[in-house]
Image (cartoon, rainbow over all chains, first blue to last red):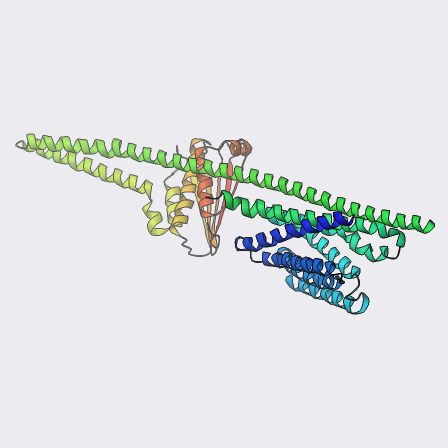
Length: 215
Length: 269
């Protein structure tokens, strides 16, 4: 089971690295707010690499998840702030600040740096699902193919993984469930792989393929 | 064992939750994708229709231009050309028989008459191309003159009603287009509608022009005409689009035609 998980993680890491490189290279052809999505992917790549190193060294890598949750939320929220123009920017700003405060308070007082931050993860995942739904409702007439793919990736990954992050801490209370624990993380790794593949497909279809065939 | 069963149930519920959420997300994505494709198809269809309509208008504009050129060529050939030929013949006659005073007097008299006619014809052709009244005195006077050129009797009676809030002079091209639209409407009323009475109400407002037009002609079914509009109506539509005015046409068989055209100065054509 662990082998499947590590294979999935390694493949995803590879595709994530390709995506980061491709996205950063494609930034000059994309509207400027896409830089937030590039930052989000880059943060994901850096955190994944460090998490792997810490894991191999048998050091608790959960503090990285706390940092990642915080920066992931900021970058994805700033990305969606530009997309969801039906929500006033000021209100969106207040929402981002409020959730950031909750993430920090959760780490400081409820779920420490060395434990799994399931509360913060659940809240942020619910927010991303909300962003994706808002986007589909608001921009259905004017959304680009690339944005629709990115948004589909966000909706599928975060909807699928919401329950995984929500119940991870609960599962640890049941010794009988430990053999099943890996299934959840395999599911998450699989969903994250699908997420990265959709982003890669979006980049190829809307940025790189048109460039290849343009005169 | 009991504890194990409870744990299994929890795990099953979590997995079920994950699957349900995932299915909902995928269903939503597919639904949104389908809706977007449908909207895109509708937009494409509307664009194609608009393009076809524009092509039709362009075609009618070109056709109208060609008709106008043909008419000018005919006028020049039949009216000016033939008169210049007669002048030429008379001048030859004058040169040949210049010794006979009676012939000279008669020929010079004829020449003056033909030259006078040619000047009148030239003025008429030039007037048709660009009415000098419109150029010098604006739309109000040009419409008044146009209406007065239909004195009643065998020609239809044209009643002109002017409402003026403001001594407005809009851009000359706008005035020319409104004037041409009016000419086309009158032409249609006479040729197709067989109207005996035409009413024109021109309202020069501080912010634009309103033109009301009605006749007592045979009228037509607007739906049928919309499917297959004549050159005249297409020409009107083209000019309306060109100046960015609002246009309403109402008609019924046997009940004449009513047209309302509103042009607002702030509109960008």
